Image (cartoon, rainbow, N blue to C red; front, side, top):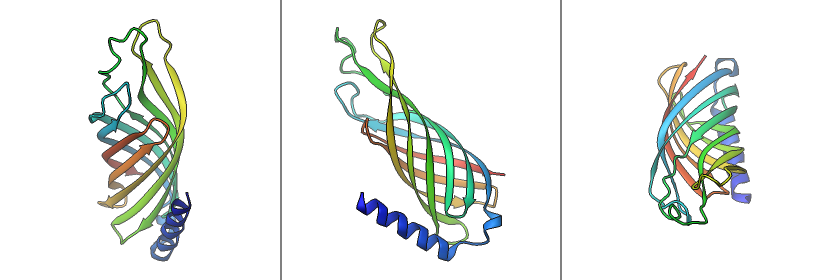
Length: 175
C-alpha cells in the first residue's frame, strides 16, 4: 500500500508541473472499451474471455477525474459445471473510480485508477441463488488524445477480491 501512495504522489506532482490550463480540461466524458478478462479459481479455468465496458465521468482538472463504470467479465466455467454442488462465478462489475493522471506531453498521459463496486456472481445451477460481492479495483493506463474531444486508452485493471485481470483498449469522447 505504501508503494501505491508513493506512486499517486509522483503522478500528481509530475502532472501538476506539466498540466496546461485547467479550464481546457474540465468536463464530462463517455468511454467504451473492449478487451480480455482473465482469472483463475476452482470455478473458471484461467483462460482469457472477451470483456467490454462503458464509463461516464467528469474531469475536474488534467490530473483528477471521477467516473462510474460497468464491465462485463463473461467467464466461461468448465470446472464445476457438472458438479452437483454447483458454484458461482463473476459475470460483470459496476463501480465508481477516481482516476489520477500525469500528462507526459500534449497528447500522452499516464494514469492510475482506484475503484470500488459490486461484482455480480452467476450460479451454475438453476436452483442456486445468484449473488454479488463488493470489491476494490486498481488500474493503470496510457492515454493518447487525438484532439481535445477524442482519446484512445490502453488500460489494465485488477479486481482484488475475485483475483481478475482485465486488459482493454477503448475510446473516450469528451464534451
